[in-house]
Structure formats: structure tokens, C-alpha cells
Amino acid sequence: MILTITLNPSIDRGYIVDGFEKGKVFRAKEVQYTPGGKGLNVTKVIKSFGEPVTATGFLGGMSGKYIESQLDSMDIQNKFISTDGETRSCIAILSSDKSQTEVLENGPYISEAETLDFYEMYKDIISDYEIICASGSLPKGLGMDTYQKLINIANKQGKKFILDTSGEALRLGIEAVPFLVKPNQEELEKLVGHTISNEDDIIGGAKYLLEKNINIVVVSLGAEGSMAFSKDYAYRVKVPKVRAVNPVGSGDSMVAGFAVSILRKYDLETMLKVAAACGTANAMEAETGKVNMDNVKHIMDKIIIEKISYK
Image 1 (spheres, rainbow, N blue to C red):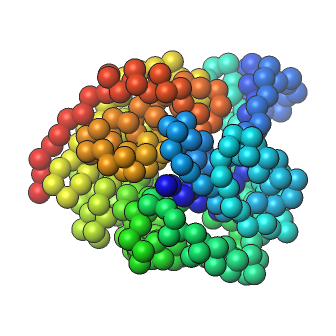
Image 2: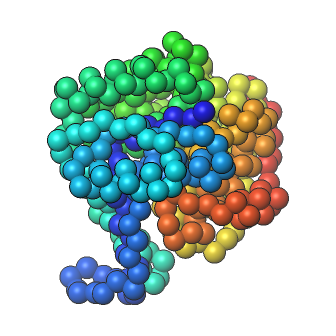
């Protein structure tokens, strides 16, 4: 089973607006409300594969109740800690020229008592799960070492931990040695402390992380695909061009593909195809954290994996 952690979930509010620009009044052509936050996007895609998954984190207020009810309606198990604050909203405005404008709320303050409740619940339940995916930003009140602590607890029980975050939370999390990390190029630059301008730089940055005993490092390169690294091999992953509708959640969908692949014990090259296909398929959907499994299978056949031997 897979456990997903979303410490700062949201209601994702998507507005499709023709010719959007600041300072004017528009009527939305289409409006969508979905349970969001990176971890919940991961959860929804895992559910699409038919694998057992449980979502956890913090929820509060009417927004929290809405998210919980939506997860229940999707038959997604969830075990959240209730907070006094209101769960945030994240707004994405998609214009007819394919540009996207996002407005992200910070989220509620998590009290010390709520934090302790979460840690106690987490320690109680993780024995039931093989893989743990933690994704996204940290809400106010939680220390930057939160993911580091969660990884340490998981590692003591032999769990495989996938971490997808950024900034100081990522840097500290890496020190606890998660099983897989998925930085983008900008995040990798911050981790290694210098500009990354070519493939050799990416390889050097990935080696830096592998030397910390992380098993798999995936560097997301946007439309150019990704590069993935294990102890012995590097891989270039090239994805086919598709008609993108909404790219939000594509990285989260990749994480879901990795989680499912690890659970199913796929070899690394198959794992890379599944994960990349999930990310690409998500971009074809209007809703975040959604993939059509027929699209995933079709895209997998077109993904090119190039193995690079390196030391």
C-alpha cells in the first residue's frame, strides 16, 4: 500500500478565461474545483491505477470538509488531522494563448498540538504501508526539518520514501536519505550551489545526491523530458509531443507513476516509462492530478529511454 502526505493541501480552483490580462474584468468560460496540493494530485493518479492508497496531512474549515468529502466520493482512504485554520485555495487562470497565471494562498498556521497529533498518527499507521510519498510546501508552523523527521521515522521501519519538495525543506530532507527525489533544474542548482547549464552539470548534480545514498534521482526538464540516475546508470527520458491542455500536476503525476512502479517492483527503465507517461498524460487533461490510462499506455510506447553508462 501507498501513503501520500500533503501537509499543505488546497482546493484547486481553475478558471479558463479568453484573453486574460491584469486590470480588467472577465467572465470565466469554465470553472473547476478539485482537491489539490501536490500530494493529493499524486493520490488521485495512484487511485487511477487501482492501487490501494491513503492520503494524510492537515485539513481545516469548510474547505477541508469539501476536500474530505470529495476524497470520500472517489473512494480514496484518508486520515487527516483537523486544524483550527482554514485549508487554503490555489487559483489557476488559463488563458486562450495557453499562458497560465497562478495565485497560491499560504495556508493555515499549524499549531504545536496539531503537529504532535500528526506525528503520533504517522508513527501509528506507517507500518501498514510499503511506500510513502511526501509532496509540496510546508504550512506555517511546521519546521523546515519536518520532512527530514518523517523520512527518519520511515527509514527506521524500512519504508521507501519519495520526496518531492523544494528549498530548505528539500535540502534537509535529503540529509535523511529518502529513496527517491525529483528536483527540477532550478532546485538542483540550489542544492549544489552553482548554475547548471548542460548535461554534464546535471550528471554532476545527480552524483552529488547519489553519494548521499539516495537510490534514484530524477531531474525534471519540463517539455524536454527528464534525466534519471541510479548508482550505475544515467538515463535520458524523451517524451512525445502532445496537445497540452493544463500542465499543472504533471510532476505530481510522475511521482505517482514512480510510486506505483516501485510498489509493483518494475525494473528502472519500465518505471521511467510509466512515470514519464503519467506526467505527459496529465498535461492532456483540464483537471489537475488526472490521467487517462489509455493515454498513459499509448504514450509509453512512444517514450525513448537512452541509457548512459557513467562513473
